Image (cartoon, rainbow, N blue to C red; front, side):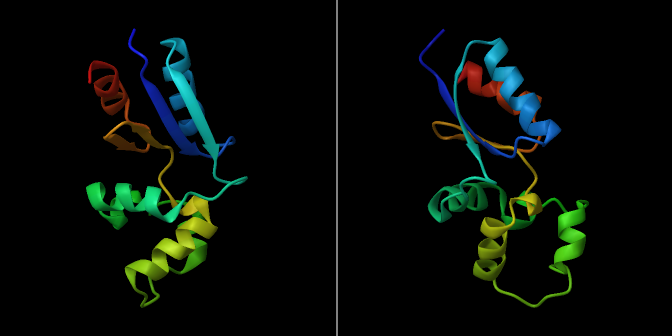
Length: 118
Protein backbone atom coordinates (compact mmCIF):
# COMPACT_ATOMS: atom_id res chain seq x y z
CA UNK A 1 0.00 0.00 0.00
CA UNK A 2 1.12 3.57 -0.58
CA UNK A 3 2.02 5.89 2.24
CA UNK A 4 -1.51 7.23 2.25
CA UNK A 5 -2.43 9.10 5.41
CA UNK A 6 -5.88 10.24 6.40
CA UNK A 7 -6.96 12.89 8.80
CA UNK A 8 -10.18 12.15 10.65
CA UNK A 9 -11.98 14.99 12.39
CA UNK A 10 -14.61 13.63 14.73
CA UNK A 11 -15.53 12.82 18.31
CA UNK A 12 -14.73 9.56 20.05
CA UNK A 13 -18.33 8.80 21.04
CA UNK A 14 -19.58 9.15 17.45
CA UNK A 15 -20.34 5.78 15.86
CA UNK A 16 -19.59 7.18 12.39
CA UNK A 17 -16.20 8.49 13.56
CA UNK A 18 -15.37 5.06 15.01
CA UNK A 19 -16.49 3.44 11.74
CA UNK A 20 -14.05 5.65 9.80
CA UNK A 21 -11.22 4.80 12.19
CA UNK A 22 -12.00 1.09 11.88
CA UNK A 23 -12.25 1.27 8.07
CA UNK A 24 -8.78 2.79 7.68
CA UNK A 25 -7.14 0.75 10.46
CA UNK A 26 -8.36 -2.50 8.90
CA UNK A 27 -6.64 -1.42 5.69
CA UNK A 28 -3.45 -0.45 7.55
CA UNK A 29 -3.76 3.22 6.58
CA UNK A 30 -2.02 5.73 8.82
CA UNK A 31 -4.61 7.83 10.66
CA UNK A 32 -4.25 11.21 12.24
CA UNK A 33 -7.29 11.47 14.51
CA UNK A 34 -8.42 14.88 15.68
CA UNK A 35 -10.95 14.66 18.49
CA UNK A 36 -12.95 17.86 18.10
CA UNK A 37 -13.88 17.77 21.78
CA UNK A 38 -10.21 18.14 22.70
CA UNK A 39 -9.10 20.36 19.87
CA UNK A 40 -11.44 22.42 17.70
CA UNK A 41 -11.06 22.17 13.94
CA UNK A 42 -8.95 24.97 12.47
CA UNK A 43 -10.98 27.53 10.56
CA UNK A 44 -8.86 27.01 7.44
CA UNK A 45 -9.34 23.24 7.62
CA UNK A 46 -13.10 23.64 8.00
CA UNK A 47 -13.08 26.12 5.09
CA UNK A 48 -11.77 23.36 2.77
CA UNK A 49 -14.84 21.25 3.53
CA UNK A 50 -17.20 24.23 3.27
CA UNK A 51 -15.70 25.14 -0.10
CA UNK A 52 -16.19 21.64 -1.46
CA UNK A 53 -19.59 20.69 0.02
CA UNK A 54 -21.19 23.96 1.15
CA UNK A 55 -21.84 24.73 4.79
CA UNK A 56 -25.32 23.16 4.93
CA UNK A 57 -23.99 19.81 3.73
CA UNK A 58 -21.66 19.76 6.76
CA UNK A 59 -24.39 20.40 9.30
CA UNK A 60 -26.13 17.52 11.03
CA UNK A 61 -29.60 18.96 10.47
CA UNK A 62 -31.24 15.97 12.17
CA UNK A 63 -29.02 16.05 15.25
CA UNK A 64 -29.96 17.14 18.74
CA UNK A 65 -27.23 19.77 18.82
CA UNK A 66 -28.66 21.43 15.71
CA UNK A 67 -32.17 21.49 17.17
CA UNK A 68 -30.87 22.94 20.45
CA UNK A 69 -28.72 25.54 18.71
CA UNK A 70 -31.69 27.31 17.07
CA UNK A 71 -29.47 27.75 14.00
CA UNK A 72 -32.46 27.06 11.78
CA UNK A 73 -34.12 30.22 13.12
CA UNK A 74 -31.16 32.52 13.62
CA UNK A 75 -30.32 35.06 10.98
CA UNK A 76 -26.59 34.76 10.93
CA UNK A 77 -23.76 34.96 8.46
CA UNK A 78 -21.86 31.93 7.20
CA UNK A 79 -18.96 33.13 9.38
CA UNK A 80 -21.29 33.17 12.37
CA UNK A 81 -22.35 29.60 11.70
CA UNK A 82 -18.74 28.53 11.17
CA UNK A 83 -17.75 30.07 14.53
CA UNK A 84 -20.62 28.16 16.18
CA UNK A 85 -19.60 24.89 14.50
CA UNK A 86 -16.00 25.28 15.69
CA UNK A 87 -17.31 25.71 19.26
CA UNK A 88 -19.87 22.89 18.98
CA UNK A 89 -18.58 19.99 16.87
CA UNK A 90 -21.84 18.10 17.42
CA UNK A 91 -23.39 20.44 14.85
CA UNK A 92 -21.30 18.74 12.18
CA UNK A 93 -22.10 15.61 10.25
CA UNK A 94 -19.09 13.64 11.46
CA UNK A 95 -16.57 12.48 10.68
CA UNK A 96 -14.87 14.87 8.30
CA UNK A 97 -12.13 12.87 6.59
CA UNK A 98 -9.31 14.19 4.45
CA UNK A 99 -6.70 12.32 2.45
CA UNK A 100 -4.67 14.85 0.50
CA UNK A 101 -7.19 16.72 -1.63
CA UNK A 102 -9.95 14.11 -1.23
CA UNK A 103 -12.57 15.06 1.36
CA UNK A 104 -15.60 13.24 2.74
CA UNK A 105 -18.37 14.16 5.16
CA UNK A 106 -20.21 11.76 7.42
CA UNK A 107 -20.14 7.99 7.13
CA UNK A 108 -19.14 7.73 3.47
CA UNK A 109 -17.87 4.25 2.60
CA UNK A 110 -17.71 4.99 -1.13
CA UNK A 111 -15.70 8.15 -0.47
CA UNK A 112 -13.30 6.32 1.84
CA UNK A 113 -12.77 3.60 -0.76
CA UNK A 114 -12.09 6.30 -3.36
CA UNK A 115 -9.34 7.65 -1.08
CA UNK A 116 -7.65 4.24 -1.23
CA UNK A 117 -7.83 4.18 -5.03
CA UNK A 118 -6.67 7.79 -5.37
